Image (tube, rainbow, N blue to C red; front, side, top):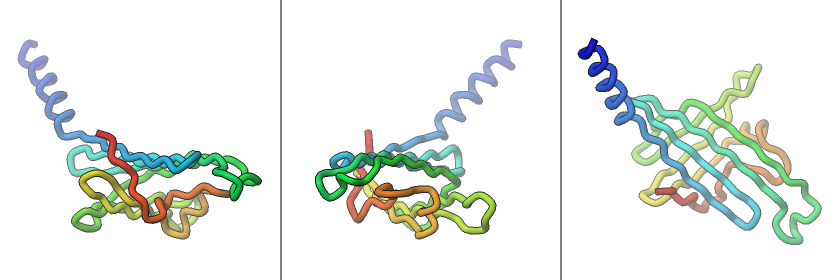
Length: 134
């Protein structure tokens, strides 16, 4: 009984040691973008959520919006990860190409990601970096 308990504890410790989640955030006025990348063993997944309230007079007549996309992720370069989410009932995918740096990440969205967002919302970081939360 004692050996089973020790084996279970060892398994739990080894599993948690192989899991890691990184968070990135960008706030631009009333626009907030949050990126989460999780690695468990060799499996990667990611999600991104956005919450946009109108910024200044240029967006004063626009409505607030919020959106989220999550899916499997794949390493596609040295410091690049692509997160893909299939559009329900279609063969198309929303793809978020994430360029990682030591301190942050830049996100580019494919045109198909427009299925998940509306109005002023978008997942693309517009060439600006989301800051890594340490």
